[in-house]
Amino acid sequence: MVDPKKEYVVPLVKVGKVELQRLEVGGNPFHGISYRDAETGEYYRRRFCEPSHLSEVIIEAIRQGVTTISISPTSYDAEFNPIFFSIIRSASEGESSEIAAVPWMNIERSLEFPAGLRKEAVFAALCAESSELAGMNVESFVRRFAEDLLCKGICRYEPLLPNLSREGLEEVWKRIASARDELRDVELKFHPQRVRGDVGDLPFDDFSIPMARPGGHIVDVLVALRRFDVLAEYADIVHEQVPSVMFSTHFAGVTVPLIDKEDVGCDGYVVPVNRLGALMWPTQGEVERAIGTTAKPVFAIKPLAGGHSLGREAFDYVFRMVKADGALVGVASAEEARSTFSAAKESLSLS
Image 1 (cartoon, rainbow, N blue to C red):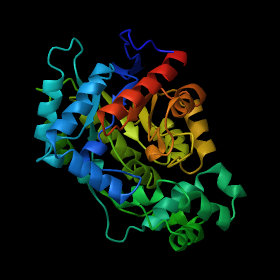
Image 2 (image 1 turned 180 degrees about the vertical axis):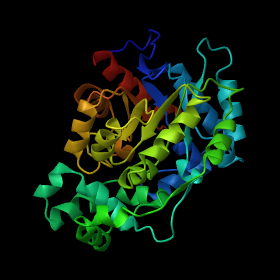
Image 3 (image 1 turned 45 degrees about the vertical axis):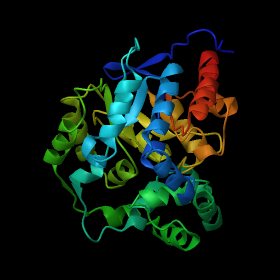
């Protein structure tokens, strides 16, 4: 057990050309984002409009030794981010460890999709890649997604996800056999200058920025469309100013193995990992296998399953069973930061 009186140094892991802390303060709560329910997201939004609440969480995280913090480029939230960055700088004054800011980059801003892109077909193509789908019937398929603890939450924030109600998933199921053919001729425009604009918007003068990652379901969409060339060009542009790039995926059981086969400049993955299997798509077992077989580092998102799974047990699954290399942890109060990072550090000390 970690001695609370002894200074604890969060261990590092090599990701591409840099070493990153294995724990990171997740940024979703600060931006009013909760995959649990709309009410929680609204509570976060109101809470972190007050700088004192934001400050106390950042101060406690740094006190716990976690000096890596998720951010977004300034223009993504131009009203909130300058306040956020100022609080991070103030909280870290006098600290011996440099703050590392890791931005989520919205790759969708650089893409132009055709008006007729069928979201059901994209989702079906990803589902069809899963070896376990051969043993599923429509009932088990619908249940897998419709009963996901965080399904409603993710659908609020991911515009390229189809309707994941029973009716919507039955439509996806009908398209599984033909989805790849349906997507074959989809044309997609990529605008590199928009990526360069987003990278140039990062606060390099304020923080160390060792790594960046495109967030959300969009990486999975590009994999379904077989546009590995776009992922490769995106990574090349980000690498011009940022040492490491990790790709985020919600369909890790499919996307991780497929990207591993391509030379796309990916230094690692950011993947939902939690003992309840929330957002571990297409199945929890497939995600566990993908993490176990990739040679690249994997960081867990949603390690607490949106608050449904807390404490040491949650982190033992992430670090000791699945053996993820790191975790992003969203906390909404100083007490949450204290208890959650203490539990994570106990688990890391035994992994």
